[in-house]
Image (cartoon, rainbow, N blue to C red; front, side, top):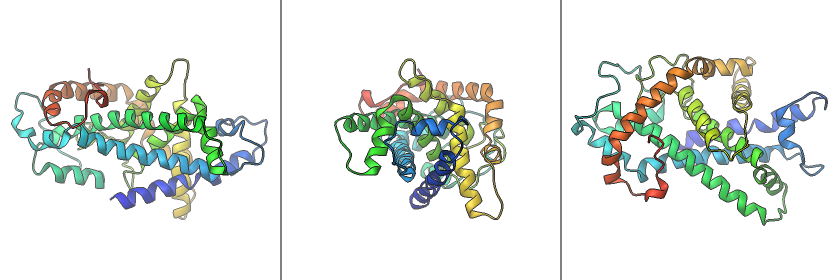
Length: 304
């Protein structure tokens, strides 16, 4: 699974060069948010592939941090002993799974070893949101390191340009996290269905909630545009699917494939669903904390 995931991230982010080349060739009078991302870069630096490498790095960091959260916060012990926790209600006692979404779902189900799968969703939300915090901290650390560095190669110059500025840094972070989530599955599902009927929250729900959380965590006065993030992410996936297939795919068709539009239409319902997951995490937290390996400062009580 890990090799396929990394290959997916590399392939998606490998489309950045072609996309940026198209954007920079557009007439200057035509507004484009990606042209603004590159604004201020030293003249002659068209190393667009380095932008893709940064996004791939952030995407991989998020996936690693998601898994670290599982291990460091004691999730495995909670899942294995979930059947013993009878005082906490299930998400939906009568819900029947629609099938495992992807390799990550199958791995989670296998690790539960027959345990109650209804515990997976709140724990996955916990790993997502704590993984997001860890990724933010990592990217902020890299940005501080670059402040005192004078890059000697074009990649270093691109990374410093993108990370040294607050707005560009947070935009790259939100794009990278979204790409990491998108690469977890080979084929996006066509419908969200019942939100409780999966071992993981559906992809569009996870993506929109993480983007919402990232926006809440941004420095005061900074407003990274979520629509621009979604447009860039879906455009990259569309370009990759076009390159691999026989017909052209548009950003709009990719938005439909990832059910982003359905997710936006059901955002209030998604918010209510995550409130339920937060309620479950409040009940799970004392038992989870008995097995966690991370100290308090590495635990984000998003559910509180």
